View 1 (spheres, protein in one colour):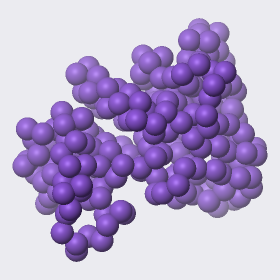
View 2 (cartoon, rainbow, N blue to C red):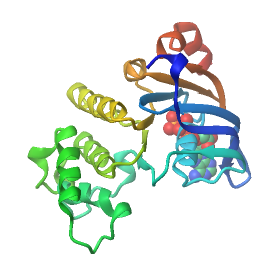
View 3 (cartoon, protein in one colour):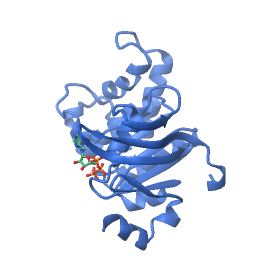
Length: 232
Ligand SMILES: Nc1ncnc2c1ncn2[C@@H]1O[C@H](COP(=O)(O)OP(=O)(O)OP(=O)(O)O)[C@@H](O)[C@H]1O
């Protein structure tokens, strides 16, 4: 992708959003390219998760316009936001990713099963598919949540710090899976504190105190000087 040929997958225009009487995002205008991985980078509390919530449609903006691709987006939260003792297997967890696109009491179609198999393979979880979710490590559970989102085959994939609890092979598995989704045309947006992961992204959005400080190629933005201004 060259930055002169960006096709927007999702766009915020003049968006303000927050909680109760507290506005967190202030007049945010930014585009997230289709067919690319965008890293949203910012200090703790800068509004990254809030921005993902607005893009996912689970948090309603108080002003401005959100444009996103057709169909329900897939949001991957951090694994510790999900009860770890759910009595279900990894495969059943991933099958739940098909629920928004079919009714839960309907039998899985061949297409559903293929989507689940592909998502397990893309996250290196095929060998663990029969394991209880509760018998996985935190990093493996994080990958199971990613697999659940991949199985949905959404056009917009949103991830809140997907590599936070992963070891190096786990990070690489997630990176590869996100890259493959982007190459299929998906709009992938991840909030991250993981600078090497942000540097591998195609596009980067820097958030500071709920405002966009800059957006563009990671190589241009993730320099010492800009990073310093993000955290100061
Ligand atoms: N449910 C909520 N109710 C009220 N305030 C909230 C809620 N969630 C987040 N906030 C506040 O909104 C601001 C932005 O939080 P947000 O979680 O979007 O930041 P973040 O950049 O994702 O941070 P982190 O890097 O720590 O995950 C913070 O000041 C936070 O305290």
